[in-house]
Length: 117
Image (cartoon, rainbow, N blue to C red):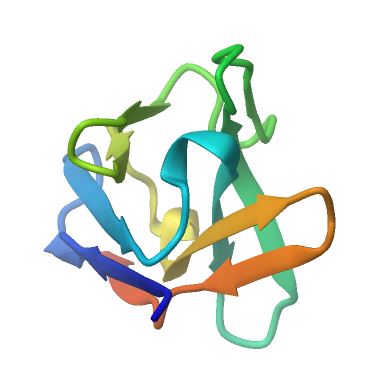
């Protein structure tokens, strides 16, 4: 059974930091591209960052470059999103996504991130 379980969301003040985690199980983690998406109220889903597989290729949305860092631990089958210097516009539900060859496509349930003073 495939599972992607996000954690680490919450309420943080502008300029603060959060680290999201996505624990994966039920598939060959190291073979998949792992992505973080987010969806703000009233907006479409936005690709935030992606990593892998094996070659370690990483890319970010322009809106988060220099502030967010994606990483993964293959031994723990977990992908992380370190978010620094958070802004109110980063407020969204953040989703973990695993994809292989555009055929296998799995999603987590999402975790809420709210940036507000």
